[in-house]
Length: 257
Image 1 (cartoon, rainbow, N blue to C red):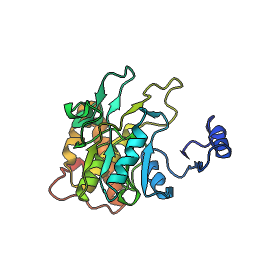
Image 2 (cartoon, rainbow, N blue to C red; image 1 turned 180 degrees about the horizontal axis):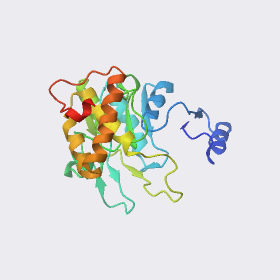
Image 3 (cartoon, rainbow, N blue to C red; image 1 turned 45 degrees about the vertical axis):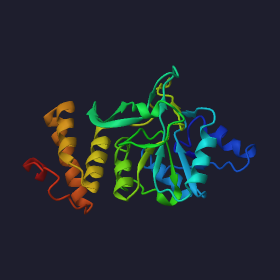
């Protein structure tokens, strides 16, 4: 368990579980917060394969056994493995994200009929929510080290696997339920500035069209607000010595200010 809120109310209980559960390990982690914490999971893991899950994720009965069997049968896989999100009412699943923009996020939940049957074979997907994912430990490509806060991981990590020659797969049996409700509210900062920064840094890194990021946030936040944020992103990336992708990025004159 990687606890990136080790001063929280659950931390002492999480630590105490080491006394009761064999092979359980508790790691308080405060160096980074947000999306990039998943990298630390892969850094400290010792197994050949890693399942990385959010703390508010639950799996359907039998999913773990079938996942371990999949790894036994595909020991050399370099693919990113995910499964359908199952909703609270337990009668509907979303197998993937469609690469579309909505409300400040790249990706909209969608259902491929091939994933409705949990016994169906795996199939490729463009992207999926990252509340639960698995792969070989040495296949994990890592996030952009400049990422901060929350947002932009969906689609980015999938494209990074593909550019490395792997696939991003939906395993229909690998079903997970995500607790979206937060009765105590959001306990961490969730800033547009961080999200825009991550999208632009990630798209630029992978050679994806950054123009669509800028256009979406100009529509969502208004041109003046979005342009201010985008200009700050360009300045910070240049200051960090990040090369800007040739031919894929529109850099407005105002971004040079």
